Amino acid sequence: MEKIDKKYIELINKEIDHMTTPDEKVELQKHLQTNEAARNYFNGMLLTNDYLDKLPDQEPTENLKKQIINSIDFNRYSPKERKHSAWAFLFAPKFRLAYTFAVGIIVGIIVYAVLINNSNTVNINDIYGTIGINSDGANTISELPLNLSDISGNIEIKGIDKNFWFNLDLNSKQDFDVVISYPAAVNFEKIRLGIAKNVEISKEQNFIKTTNSSGSQKYSLLFTQNSSEPVTIKIQILHSGNMLFEHNLIIKQ
Image (tube, rainbow, N blue to C red; front, side, top):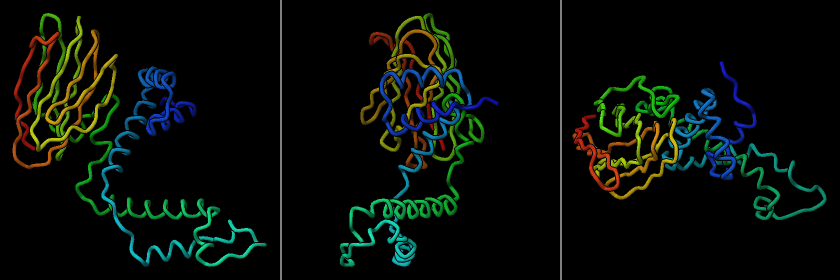
């Protein structure tokens, strides 16, 4: 099994936090294309980060607040020779580390409670793979094979719970655009790059557009559905504004 170099773990964490430089971003993308373990780790971190961002804010109970505050050893961070009022003592700048630690405990408890009690939570391993989204635990909604004069490949649509995604595996002799239009009951979430070169993405209220360079392009577009009713999704492939392919798809989750 491939190992992940510590350097690239740090780069992945920086990329998750949007702190990589352009050179580091290029270096990381090249490494992810050749190292499966690093790619799996990166993809898992992305989806975990997305999931945590969507967790609703939850106010801890007063009892929990008191337990956390009482567990902090404030003497560890305070100078012994100086005395302060209780209020100044608690909110002195020197206690930032202690408060950060306490907040971390609160967040950890809340996240753990949500993960344990939410039976509808999707297992990351069920929907995430080496390139974009994996098929484990998901249903194949449709497959759209393409054999056009300048573009060939396959578009696979899969879904699980209220999530569905387009796995695009296309090879083109020319630049092309992919436009996916969707109703208000659908939200575009993320793009997951597999083997993709020079892919640009733009988003409007009811459609997502990717601009692709020629060559092999493999990536996934992830959506969520806010309604149990069937929704109609339109996918189009264009070159210089000319329609090359168009298909309407009904998603029933």
